[in-house]
Image 1 (cartoon, rainbow, N blue to C red):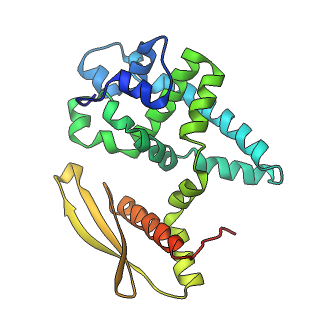
Image 2 (image 1 turned 30 degrees about the vertical axis):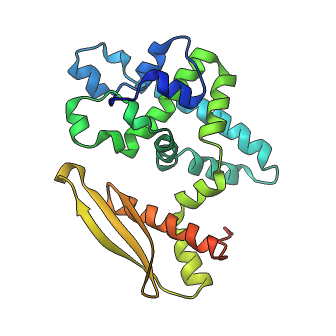
Length: 237
């Protein structure tokens, strides 16, 4: 847990006060930390992640079922998968800065674990499971609705940003664009990549991430927002 990031601050941020703060602490504890500190291996987040995954699947299924009465079972399944997949949950976790609240072992810390999608998405599920155990389904549903099932239009734009940008620019605008590398910095195990989206000799947007793919995704998303502001609307068919 980084300096200035406390359990009290996180509870204020999510709008839920735990009766048993040990559940929240467990949800934020990575196995590398328990191994390093020689703590009972059952006290890291993986069991809570298992429970949170099931709660999230139920709540998101219920949400989609009521919000989309005309969608088939297959379409609902596909939409749910995009909403609760690893990149989607990592996107939501970053909004809460969950990675900064985590307890990691030194090795995981030094290799960029706080920013890794696979870890922070798991923690998002673990926090969901902890809230469910502490406060029941209604508390978990409130958390999921507020931090995972909100702003779905923009989130969907982000999840599919690269394919959406290609369809909008090449399909609708009949133009070409490129991803141009701007910078690569940091140690080998914890690099940061910066990428620009360029069209007609203009830099439309920039993005950064721990992989080139993540940086391109962020840059594509920012380009889509800019083009939307200019009146170019992408419509998913």
